[in-house]
Each structure stands twice: as C-alpha cells, then as structure tokens.
Image (cartoon, rainbow, N blue to C red; front, side):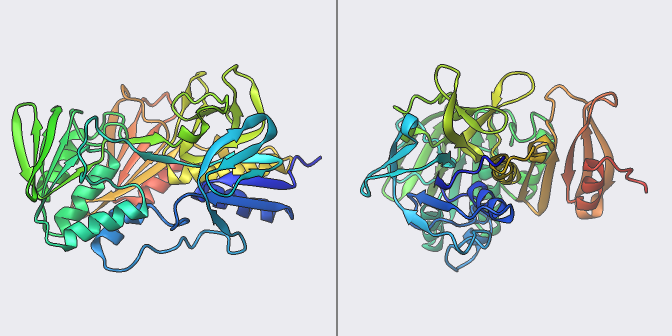
Length: 386
C-alpha cells in the first residue's frame, strides 16, 4: 500500500529536493509538490561557485537538474507547526501539507566579533560579492579555514593571480574531509601553487584600515586586500527553534529521514534530507553528511519510502569529492581516523594516486586523486589489475 502523501511541502530548493521530486514522478506520484526557498536565485549549482563561477564572467546559472514542471516559491520559512504539518512564512502566511520535508541545507559559520566586510562563500549572493571584489582589482586574500571550501577558494584565487594566505586552527588542510589523512600532501598542493599557509594558529583579531585588512593569528599580523571566512557550515535550523524537533547539530532523524521530536519520538509526517539532516548511523550516534551525492540519495530514498518500497539508496557507502589545485579528489566510505593509509596506485606524471584506508580485514575506504578509473574499480570492489 502506498505511503505517498497527496500534498508535499518542501523547504529548500536543493539537489536533495530535486531528486525527491524526480524519483517520485518516476514512481507515479501525481500529487502536488510545493517548494519554498528564501534565496531568490534558487535553485542553482553550489559546487561551481568556488571554481568555475569565480574564474569566469557569466551569471550564476540555474540548475539543470531541477524538475522543469516544479516551480519554486520565493518565500522565507520562519516557523513550523509540527503537529499540524504547517509551515509559517514571513510574508505569504502559511502552507499546510500532508508531509513536510526540511531541505534547508547549511549556512556559513561566522567568527565571533567578525567585522562587516569579511566575505564568505555559501550562496550565489556571496559568490557575486566575492567575484566583484576580485574583479575590482584585489591582489591578495586571507582565507580563514582550510576545509574543502577554503581549499577550493585558495586554488581558484591563486589561479586568478592573487597572493593567497590560508590560516586554520587545525594542524592540516581538509582535516574533516580526509579524517586526518593526507594532510602533508594537501599542504604540498597549496605550496606548489604559491599559497602561504599557517596551520595550528588561532585568529585573535580582524581589523580593517582604509582598504586593507589585518588578521592577527597567534601573535603574527597578516595583511591582505580581502578576508574570506571559510571556517565551516552550520545547519539552517533557526526557523525550527520552536518546532519541538530535536535540533542537535541539524534535524535529528531516523536512518531513513523521519524527523525526531525532542522526546525522541518520530514527528508524524515531518522529514529531513540533505545537509540539514543528522541521521542515526549504525553505532547509534547521529551524523550529518555534507555531500552532493549523499543528498541525492536522501531524496531518492524518501521518494521510495513514500511509494512503499524498501530503498537501497542509503545502504551505499558515503561518497564525496572536491576539485582543487589541478586535482579531482574522491572519497568513498567512512575514513577511519586511526586506519592505516596505504598507497596502492601512483602516476606521478599526472599527480594521480589511490589510497586504501583501513586494514585488510575491514571494509576498506578509498581516497582517489586524479585516478577516476582506479577509484571506481576500488569502490566497486573490483581488482585494480583486471
């Protein structure tokens, strides 16, 4: 028997939302989807903002993956009446539905006492402001944070000819993405591109005098034309503060995306997908996966749940990727921080490598650098030699 509601309200025009709608249509859903998003440019691709868009001159392009027959209403959600499955809006009243899907993603974390004028990159508006500043003649930039976004920005701005400095409290770049592995290699990529790095340092102050910025880190003063904060992302759940949902680092959910109340009970008809959802994993903890691919899987799995199917989408190992410093880096599986890192393939002439993380007795996780064929075969459990 189908569990598909007749009217579904989705907050957030994300890639997870798009996959939910597309897969539902494939499964025969003929009901109504109401999609709300506060970003006037949504939906659009976020990954290119730190790469192609910042390098180019064209506009932010609409997402080709968005279902054409599904309009997006530009409206800001300010609350949720959970028991009534009703979304409260800032200007358009309210929207009630049989099911509410929370897909609001994550927003940039801002530093304490961060002064006005510090840039960030999460939305199209952020990307336009950053590119405008670079186009206006900025010659140098300090990037605070060396996660994937910070590293991608360092790569792109160095490619545009800026003198780039990266600072981070962590001991190495992309600490979370790599789970502590390949830190020295990632540092080398930055240094080869001329990026100056300071790791293991704390930001003490950020000041602007005339058109120039000074960032003080652990007693050292750094100077640049631009300062960009890339210290991480926080799930967009402020509008859910009084909803009664468990908002511990995102919307806590069951493994298949049913939102949980503060009492630990399932909220009837409320779901969360994508970066905003913190899902229960095998060890009983809750984890958010900031991954394009994982967001798509969330959307497809929810569509299949609604249709009464046992989805296999969420059984697949997590996958993530980044492009920076002439390298496409791919990660398959949960990288154990204490796992053994073994290089199983290398092609130095094209900066390619493949690494296995974990012991031979465990299900291995993989890191591929400019090695798409070898990475795909390893992720599928196939021999690299066949």
